[in-house]
Length: 142
Image (tube, rainbow, N blue to C red):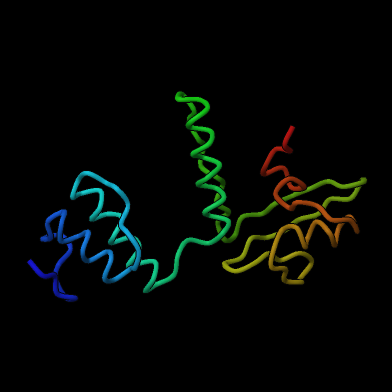
């Protein structure tokens, strides 16, 4: 049965999804054996094409999580800390107390707006730092 470009992927058979993949995405579809998995993969690829794919940072994070799950089946990731606007970060550095306020789209340090904590850490220390490590939000890698 021919597949029309406006057909609903949820209603397509496995064979129809494979045809739609070739037509809409080019190349051969992955060798998935269930309609549900191919439907998810096809829908994701269409969405990524229309609205943009994951950022490179997200792809790296997912690859790292996949590696950790493969190496240790009992691995349980912890969510990364999300800083909420209004949060105050305090760091004592060389006898001086430094306070940073988290904003919707940056960080306020002494009335100056910074795009990242790393920029604030650089302003404080004069050297490049990972801002999350400098402010104790993330542990250093061993």
